[in-house]
Amino acid sequence: MSTRRELENLRKRLNRIVPLVQPPELKLHVIGANDPIPTTSPWELIIKVEDRNPAFNT
Image 1 (cartoon, rainbow, N blue to C red):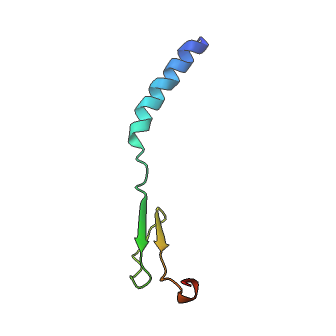
Image 2: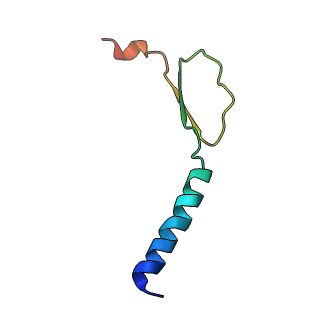
Image 3: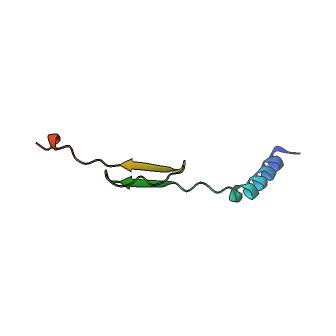
């Protein structure tokens, strides 16, 4: 079997497999200091924005 033919067969096999794999849905939650933290999964990121410190507002 020639190398070109092997590569073509591998491409065909990959094209059949690739659509079956669904990437995970990534989520980003931005919440305030007093907001409850939502339940998370490994594919979610939570950014908690804290209130301003009055000492820094001079």
